[in-house]
Length: 382
Image (cartoon, rainbow, N blue to C red; front, side):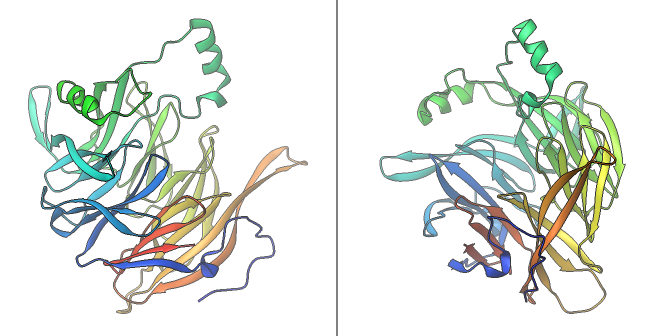
């Protein structure tokens, strides 16, 4: 299903109903998680499968290049995602594991470099939790847009910390794990880095909040954002405290429903609507209904400020429907009010499937998209 294109919509990014499936692969078992790793300027597709199997595919031809079988237990909330250009994280029922993808001659290999169990000692108390998502904090993210910080760095000749900070989301809150960063980042020598990593692993340091967040992302060098039921929370990475909460619609139990559109605007999909929040002004600048009685389960930011939205029907009917909706973010300065006006312009929509499904999607290079649909289909759209 497509629809008439809004005359306001103008973009260099292809519309979803005009894209073609250029590659498709049927996976023999259920896809639990989907990720993309850009290793040596090539996109590799990461799959977390039923029974905890990990598979890595070349995005150019969907050729299987590496896999690890049965290394970890799983559940329906399993997660796989990139940490850096060489490392990715896999989260299962009882642990978080960090893997490296590395090339040895002409072969690609996977190596487990660290396992973090879901037992954490805090103030002499041992707590048990389940991990859900993780990323490495970038202490310089959008710092160049903060005049005060840049001036402070110049005056103090600020020396960057040599610590790497791993942010982990869990049922018992958000945790910070730290390790000393390898000073030599010019060349990725796996064997050398692996030996150093074993002597210098990530270790628990701080707890940001004790509340379970469905999704977390880094907003900028100051804040991370997390979603709880009907609220978006901003947490300070300087004080490890809650800064503010926004009363908005959220999609419970979804872990890929918000992204930064630019250095200021946070885009979040929740329930049947998209909300835009200005981080600079701490205010909601737009709420836009996408489709009533449907629920946003995933969003993906495409080039040229395009927002690809995955939605499922949220009514009492027995039929299962999953849709794509594509919008483009835009803003103008109102010359009368001297205020910025934000909007999202609808491009088109597409019925993805009527079968049972849980859409997952990630952006690839060259305006392509990889999606996992109907639990066992892997597709590249162009």
